[in-house]
Every structure is written in C-alpha cells, then in structure tokens.
Length: 220
Length: 239
Ligand SMILES: Nc1ncnc2c1ncn2[C@@H]1O[C@H](COP(=O)(O)OP(=O)(O)OP(=O)(O)O)[C@@H](O)[C@H]1O
Ligand SMILES: [Mg+2]
Image (cartoon, rainbow over all chains, first blue to last red; front, side, top):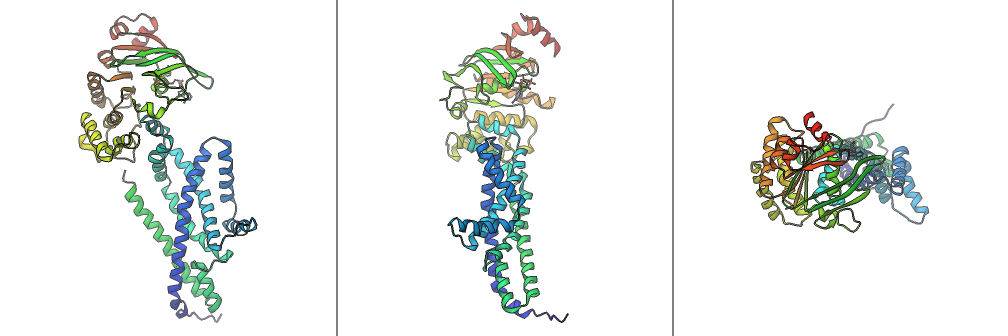
C-alpha cells in the first residue's frame, strides 16, 4: 500500500468540521429534548390502560426499537415527501432521531415510572394536587432520576445516529461536511479519523455534562 | 361532620366494606381498631375519595365525596391524611415537601407558603430540618413532617392510618405526642391505630372494625373495659 498520510488538508478544513460538529450537537441535543418529552407521553399512554392510547404508543415504540434507525430516517424523508409533506434533510434527520429516541426512552421511562411507588401518587393526591400536578411535581422528577443513566446512553446514541443524515443528503453536520471534503480531496482516512475523534469528544462532553447535571439535580 | 352511611366497597370480587355506618362530629377524636385486613385503611381512603365506593354515601360537611360533581381536589384540601409510611417526597427538602401543596393547590406565594410551613414544622419540632432531604430524617421525623405537611393546608379533618406502626419503638412516642397535641387543640381526627393505650387516652370514641363493618363502637371505657361483644373482647385480648 502506498497511501501516504497527509494531514495538512484536514487541518486546514478543521474550522469547517467544527461548524459541522456544532450542528451535530444541535441536532442530537434537540432530538434528545423532543424525544424525552414525547417519551414521557408515550410511557404515560402505555401505562394508562386505555387501548386507544396504549396501542398507538406501542406501535411507535415497537417500530422505533425494532427497525434500523436508517430506515426510520429514510421513511421520514421519502415517506412524508410522498404524502405531500416535503421535509428537508435536516428536518428528516431531526425527526428520525427524535422518533427513535422517543421509542427507546419510552420503554426506559416505563420502567422508571414503575420504580416510583404508588404511595407517592396517593400522598400527592391527598394533598389536593391534581393528576397532572402530581405527575409534574412528584412522579416525573423521581422517574427521571431512576432512568438518568439510561438517558445518558441514549444521548450518546443520539449523537452517533445523527451521522446517518448523510443518507438523506445532509451536508452541514459533521459527517456531511466530512463527506463533502472527502469527495473533493480523497483524503478519506484522515478526514474520517478526525471526524471520529470529534464524535468521540462530543459524546464524552455530553456524558460529562450529564454527570454534572445529575450531581446538581439529585442531591437527595 | 363526616357522615358515612351504609358504605360498601369491593375490589373486584373481594368485598372489603360491607355496610359501614359512622359519623364523626367536629372536634371529635375517633380511633379505629381491628384486625389486619378488616378494611380500616380502605375506609380512610374512601373518605377522601382516593378509593371509590359501590354503594352508600359519604359526606364531609354536607359535600358528597363520591358524587360525580364533587371536586375532589378541592375537598381534599380540607382533609389531611398521613399514611403508615413513604409519605415523604424524597426529591424535595423538608421545607419544599410542606410548601408544595399550599403553593400549587392553594396558590399561595412562596413567602406565604414558607411562613406557614415554618410555623407547622416548628409545631412538630422540625424547625431545624428545613433544608434537609427526607432521607436524612428518622422515621419518626418523617412522620412528623408528613403531619406538618397536611396541617399546612389548614385542614378541618385529619386522618391517620397506623402512622406509628412502621417505626422503631423508641420513635413511636414523639409521633404520638404530636397527635396528642393536635387532639388537645381541637382537631377532628380519625385515627387508625394499634396503640391501644393511645387510643384509650385521646379518643372520644373507639370503633372496632371487623369483617368490613363496625362491629362495636363506644367510649374508650366501654370498648376497653366493658366490651359488649365477645369478638371485641377477643380482639383486645389477642394484642
Ligand atoms: N387496591 C386494592 N386492591 C385489591 N385489594 C385490596 C386493595 N387494597 C386493599 N385490598 C384488600 O382489602 C382488604 C382490606 O384492606 P385494608 O388495607 O383496608 O385493611 P386494614 O384493616 O387497613 O388492614 P391492616 O391493619 O393490615 O392495615 C384486604 O384484604 C386487602 O388485601
Ligand atoms: Mg391498613
């Protein structure tokens, strides 16, 4: 093999790649927040014991967890398009990861909800708190603590999944930018090596900040 | 006044309450005693509407608890309840535990709610523990906090469900003292308890629960010294 490493081009385009990394962080972060909110509703729907709520929630969760994330993003890009809802590649990717996150997190949250004793709900309701207030102030905060570690894993997964944007033509996230540069320069190994390092750093940064958040939040 | 008329309660096929009749006057302290599984806890949870009923009627100051139109959240402001255990919200400090409902249910400002909470927590001897999380409290302190939390809503009635039975023996006294103090202050209370000495000392009346009914009810003297029914005597001898 007479491939000669050349790092200069990749260093020169590092600023571009960092911008791409920023968008990766943005997509993964947004998808995580949206996914968390949706997952809470999905988990509550499954717990409600009402078929018309639990059945759609079940279909969502089953699809998200048992089909490739790649397929999910594809379906949102082309599927919604064929329904006349044209979405851009950024939106398709964001929705795709959100869909996936929500499905996985819903299952995690279901376990988390089960870990909060029924007596907590009873105590809250006896004080006159309504059902929604009880969920918001008493049950959900305790549930989130129980699942925090699993959420951190999902966050990392969310970062890594965002690299799939390239299949729906996204060129502005870390993978997209890297791929564009690669096509022009053919320094494939160097570019993707640096991209991988950046992904690693982003994932670690999320894990560490999650630890700080947990330490601040869960002092009890 | 709490009026309970011919209340029946079933969990599926299990018939737990089989026609309970009882009324508790303002200012009265009523103790409920009886064997495990006789339906005492269930009775309390029916009174504040945590459990539904299949037949009969419960009214609190004329408001029918299980009527469709009744706003239970509103009714529950007037009825404090303390359970056997796990009353504390573990993720909130003692102060937050007590201010939560006054703020979110009664709409009080943080300052108002904290003033009330500090007053009630001092009342039960927990003024020093405001910023502490419940996991740092003893069982007895947790129960007193739960009492303060209920009192912060200025309830007209307090229901206690075996609040000392999960406690280490040396912690029982402090909680009973708190309840004793409340009864002296004229609080209307229904107290499910296994503490017979306490029941005898603070109650105006004692009700013996058996098989989903009130088997015998009367003054503490009658129940403890001169029970009219053989089952009452047998129960008292058994504990
Ligand atoms: N949510 C429920 N679902 C089904 N059965 C229940 C439920 N709650 C209570 N029961 C049953 O109802 C009966 C009465 O229970 P309850 O807790 O009211 O008794 P208790 O008099 O408070 O007993 P203890 O002194 O042990 O606390 C028991 O047989 C119990 O198993
Ligand atoms: Mg009980």
